[in-house]
Image (cartoon, rainbow, N blue to C red):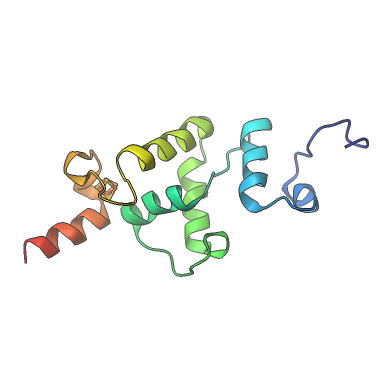
Length: 123
Ligand code: SF4
């Protein structure tokens, strides 16, 4: 902190060298402090992305290459903060863990999860 005058480094590799900083916090620092597009990938964002695009292969979000790349691609935008917040709000209000509001969701026409559940109900 003294060496850096109380500021977090901007390079991801340098942040990774700081003890006790995990992937989510490092991405938060990059996004919120340095304005570098980064996903706030937690279980809620993972749920939305996986339902809409398809499921990950590995159980741990942090190490699943498909989910990691997907999350980066989705938020890689000049409005990355807003996109991150919108996904997290959407996860809390619409694409909830239990009983997602699929019937009223504007993404249902192209959502993999919805297609799967809808097809199951109608077969
Ligand atoms: S249709 Fe349902 S599962 Fe798909 S994104 Fe919307 S709320 Fe989530």
